[in-house]
Amino acid sequence: MQQQGHRAGTLKQSNKVHKSRHKSKRGVAAAVKGKVNVKEFVRRNKHVLKKEERRHQALQIRKNKREEVIATKRAVGGCRSPPFLVCVVALNARLDVQSAISILTTCSENANVSKSPNGVVHIGVSSFKYRYSFICPETHDEFGLLDALKVADTVLYVSSALDEPVDEWGEKVLALSMAQGMPTPVVVAMDIEGVHPKKRTTEKQNVQKLVSKWLPDEKVMQLDKSSDGLNVLRRIGNMRRNVLHHRERRPYMLAEEVEYVPDAEGDSGTLKVKGYSRGAGLNVNSLIHISGLGDFQMSQIDGHDDPHPLSSVKENPKSDSMDAEFTQVSVLQVADPSKQESLVCENIPNPMDAEQTWPTEEEIEMANQETKTKKVKKVPKGWSEYQAAWIVESDAEGDDEPADDESVEEGDAEFMSCEESDSEGDGDERVDDSESVAESAVEPTDERYDATIDAYEEHSQLQKLQAAREDRQFPDEVDTPQDAAAKDRFSKYRGLESFR
Image (cartoon, rainbow, N blue to C red; front, top):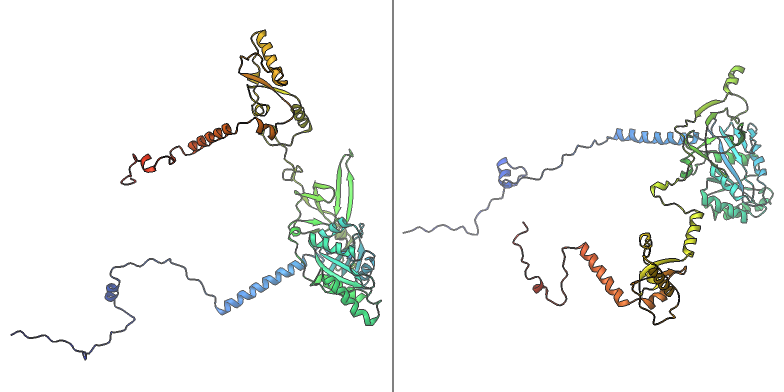
């Protein structure tokens, strides 16, 4: 008798699965079942900066930025750099800017004031350790104003509280300076002391309101006393300057002394220009541009003693021999003819290179004469003058001479009949199937084209040309016919078993 097997009931004990994050090698191999993971790219571990290293890095970045700002400030205005070039412009045509210059020159007792032959006023303030150069372009001279703003580091706009602060000339000045590229602006208001004390604040606010339309971020300063002049000079020296990239990329100079030395022949000469070089470094082998004159080559660059020092008293006095040696002119650069840039700025075309050139007056006149003269072409019979215009002239075809006198007379008669009106309707038949058409100076018009052309024939020729062009572009393609089914037309073509 067979024994019956035991069946587990609902109360059978089931143990928990062992939960372990670590598997044995045999368990990992069984789970993977021979699969290979994709290889990961090996990357170098980045060095994570520690707290002390980050602090040192921030200090170094801050130090480099500070040194860069100091170097930029020392590049202009100091005793070993060009002075601040300030362009003084009046916002009112009736205002005299020389009164503002007089306040600035007398505001400091220790200021060293000098003047160049061309009218540039130089001021050196030892307490600020800055030097300034002031230029005053003439009123109503737009081009002189633009030339002055080209080289100026700062523009000083002068207005008056007693008169209209900004008139029509002032608006034009601001528009021109903004269109060209405005240097760092400074706005001052004069004659505020002449207003009643209770109305001074109101008048200054009115000037500020008018100027804010053009320069919203600029604060108007007062310029009536010596203390005001010192404040203006201090602000010009310490303020942050606008960077004009199109100007800083190349050297420029304001000529303070100009001397022309003619050669022995007298045809040409040498122009000596003296001034402070600004912007990028000046290369003697490059060209220079003089406003109103053009481009020129330089022969050499000399270094001179600074004629406008910071103070009139020398800090380190030297002997007479040393002073004489110090004031000598030193040659900095001499031009090399092999490295100098050429003055030829336009391309000289070579007629043998088939370059496109502008036609000369003689060629234009010859072309006009050719269009006016009549030309005779040999064209097939029945062609109109418009159709004859498309025939290319050939010297070989027109050089054939007739064999006998009869052909000459016949050709002349045929030419006359073609050029004159058809008065003789029933004439003798021509043996030759071509005729000569005389071209007139008047070009064929659309009306004559519509009257003489056959539209159906031209359309058929156009279709033939298109078909020939398509056949040349796609020689192995055949269009599906319109009057037959494609399965019947291409029934002989069979599908391939494989492309191979």
